[in-house]
Amino acid sequence: MKKIHYTKPSVGELEAQYVLDAVTHGWGERCYEYITRFENTFAAHLGATYAIATSSCTGALHMGMAALGVGAGDEVILGNTNWIASAAPINYLGATPVFVDVLEDSWCLDPEQVRRAITPKTKAIVAVHLYGNLCDMDALLAISAEFGIPVIEDAAEAIGSQWRGKAAGSLGAFGAFSFHGTKTMTTGEGGMFVTSDKALYERVLTLSNHGRVAGSKRQFWPDFIGFKYKMSNVQAAIGCAQVERIGALIERKRMVFDTYARTILELPGVSMNPQPVHSINGYWMPTVVFDKALGIGREDLIAAFNSQSIDARVFFWPLSSLPMFEGYLVNTPVSFSLCERAINLPSYHDMNDEDQQRVIAVVTDLVKGRSAR
Image 1: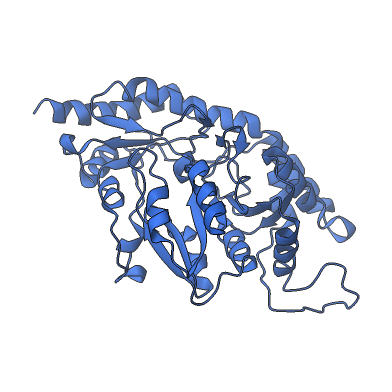
Image 2: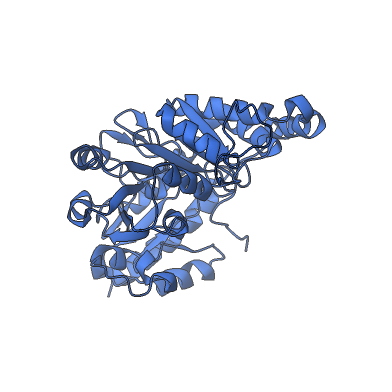
């Protein structure tokens, strides 16, 4: 039986053409050519003013938080349902992550829980757009304005998602993106810091170059300790090709989701990624959540998919359940419930209908089997 993987990238002749050019000619005076082009075209796609290509989304978050002054003694609020990359930079800087619950329908940060968690130590709020779903940016930006606390958008999984006509990652103080090989667009590994705040951009630009200020008259003179999270010109060449194809890449992910949704959402007791009327969901990772009454759990899901040679990608564990955050006091029943009864479905650009029907059959059999009891 053919193995169905949960995701893989879409790369082709255009990417190969640009990479060959970067490898052959992208040195000396052209050593930053593709990087600059990638930054400019990606920022333009988002409607943001500035962008800095990075080696990862984690690096973009780390530098952005540092530029906002996050440090020892500070607190940063984020949802307990997240991948650790959203929380790790907080710890890198000596600050404390504060985990709050997520909403049952979007699986994203609950604004009311954010409000309750704010203390005099709160330095920032990290809004993670999970699996392409969007946080309630109206509510979070209102909280930001009321308390003077910046909202950071972790849009690693939200390429193609929009909130009231604005691209995910372009609404907060800054946005961070991932171009890992699993994402809608890829550079293999890599990320991007984006903002429309000139002062913040200049601060991150200096941080990204080992603390060397642009235009300094002294060569190899850092003014303070910075970071090394740069992307290579070769990776950026792939990114340039991907941006040229980004409309088609996003549209194909949405088509894959729609094929799943037409059948799966007809089943009783299941829900999938929401798309509120004022938003567009890029649907990076189609996800099914099973109602508690069905009694379908994590191990049932893994076993059922594995038996059909389909990769089972489990829903993120609550961050507070991980060993490095042991002892953190949390009250997040939704986060702990979701991870036990949800599964990410395979989703990639060249996935054919036959493969999708195999995935749908697993979900259908699970639900009908439980409903018949």
